[in-house]
Image (cartoon, rainbow, N blue to C red; front, top):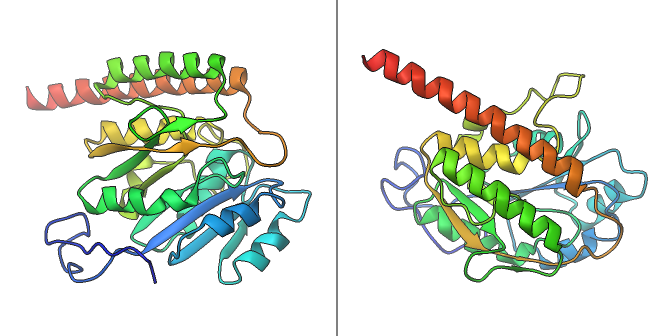
Length: 265
């Protein structure tokens, strides 16, 4: 059972109002690659939720064994390809609850913040988007180079898609599970690497939710430094992937807009 006290109200995002008398159920998806030393901290900070899905990224340490010990009832699965995007897609496919929360396994995202994300969704948002640069947010980890890069990418997305994001490239998000189809993520059963399998996944989620006209609200979140190990993020290559993603989504957005105009003519 969840520890969240908010109940659905008729007409809020529970579907058809038939579940107005119950609390939303919550799945937490945790992609993990060689995070055996960090998972105990994540578990210690985790509130009571209905389902935990740990997606192992071909770890060479004891990540899966540690996860099983920490969360005996968790769903623990290997990802089907490589990259954070693929890991999250696998986790979303395994999720069964009303709400899906995505966090990192390195201790940089604080699971204790999950109730605030859930509250934002129950209050009417479709996507509760974590932000290090909104009120209540911050970061102990971001470098000046990454901050400037994020600011530039934010500017592009906000200008193209008429959004007001303060923090585009942050991996702490929560959304109603019924919106997974809107994301149109690559098929996890395919063997070959797909666009969307990497760190561009956060941009894909944010932009496609925005393009679909869904309600997005940013939630101030504090990013800590990773506790043990080295990050799998590469500021240059992954930043370029995000830039390519923005261009791809821009072209798609333009094509959809033109088609809509043609249909209404």
